[in-house]
Length: 321
Ligand code: 8YV
Image (cartoon, rainbow, N blue to C red; front, side, top):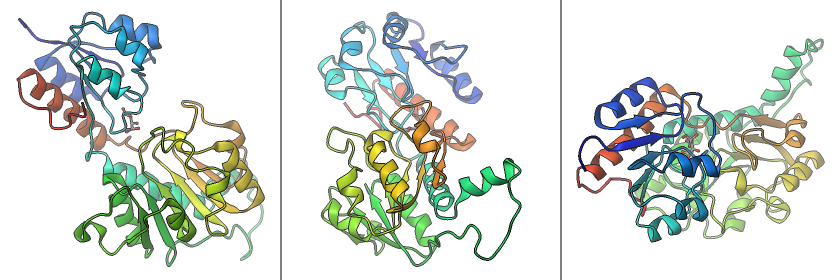
């Protein structure tokens, strides 16, 4: 290859990240930061050597089949890669990378915010004051659930799950988890391992989701599994909306079986679910788990590190296929 490789950056990244990218690559930006549909994504990828997408760009098998031979790497600006058909990329000889580790702290903070917002009725209180409807106070008013002393269940004890568990420990919670494989003792830090999902759910006063969205985990939260949770449990989802059957969640929240939910991710994004948003016992955020200045910079740099390694003939540290 002569000259700088051509890199398509699909969404607006932080200035420092874009500036660094321009030092090494001939960068094509998306100036108005709109989401590319499949046709536009294919069209924009035609004359590039690499693409740096977010989870908002869907590299389905059909999209990947329409990519040019020239495009050799998809360096994601995300840890989750459910928006990329990895098998199709592998078959097409396209390298795929992600950005693990660097977003664990930021996402764990949002998980704790979701837990506390749900447990202490944050959305309800905020809405009441903003609407000018706070006209009463009593010791019996807006009483929520305390999290200290309760059991915090982690579904998916990867990097984000582990940091979130550490934060929950700080709130005096007892940690339980289910994972495909049990963690070594030094990472488990006293957390109780459950070898089944049902075993974990049965003890989780707060259940926090940290597993990837795969065909196996789709709607893992459904009417049946919600019924396994202790009475008046709290659900926290900062992973992927596809993990939750939202209709079943709404039923459980309306019936009072679940005390509350704290959600940063939804089946439909952007937008979320208006029926969920209509419930007072749901604390909602618009998929901002990793949205801090520090983490956005680190994610951008990590994606560029992967690209730099690839184009200098080294193995990208976060290569998935
Ligand atoms: C981002 C995410 O919001 O990393 C992920 O999997 O969902 C988030 O960190 C997004 O992909 C940023 O590009």
